[in-house]
Length: 94
Image (cartoon, rainbow, N blue to C red; front, side, top):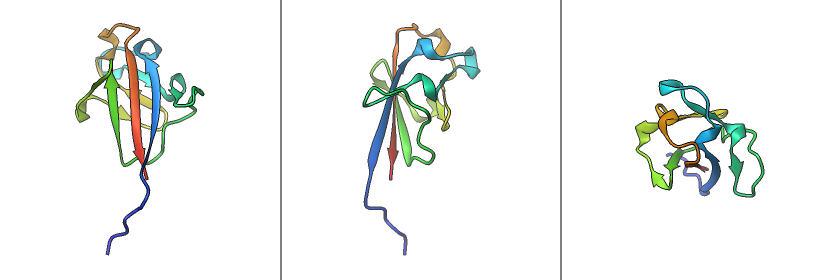
């Protein structure tokens, strides 16, 4: 029988496109360029989230738009966006 974890929570982080580096498929924003819900600078993203949601300028992006690790959020082609564009990533953890 599978174990069902009884607790789900989310961790949200915000930044802007201006915090990213690279071009084309290598455009990425470091986890340390984000702030969390309390306004504190992030040190890393959650290690093993159930899933994550990416919002660019308030619009939920498709799952194949990005990849996330504990240290980086990669958004291929994100360098063509306006530098002031807000980026929010929400990790669902249990």
